[in-house]
Image 1 (cartoon, one colour):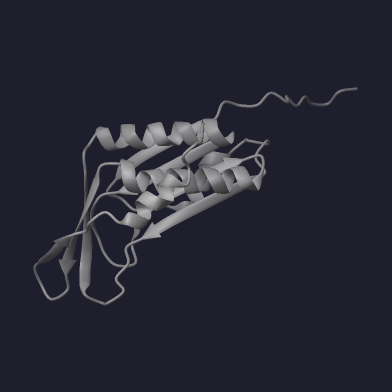
Image 2 (image 1 turned 90 degrees about the vertical axis):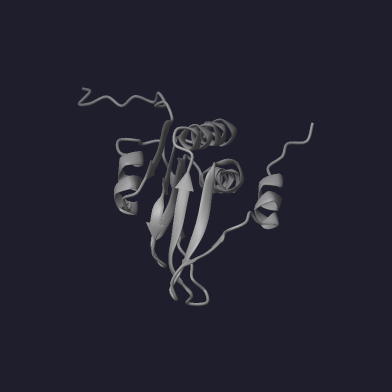
Length: 166
């Protein structure tokens, strides 16, 4: 006697990309991505925070190119899903003024196995840092604005590790 049926068919991967001023709830985002997904065995999340190592910032202002930023992150997310066999991925990036300690970016990747989830999250984050159109400007605690934050060579090096040979 069969009391219930379970399908072994794999659900289509979920890709969610949002750019918003509001903060995000990490637990809620993980729950939304994994809800009713029995094939998931691993969830990896990365949260980037507004850092102020020297105590000189009042905020970091993030600007983006609307529409283009979402599309760029969507392309990267789709590549991560395809390349690592992810069950789903969520990328949320905030814009506007963010105080030190505040959330800036969230990446959540889920897969059947942990290495795929780790790799998918790292891949998306490495490409997001270099390929998504965002700009950061410092607002100083002493008043006024500081410099626009320049791109880092370390971000380009992190992205380069994902290049395929051949």
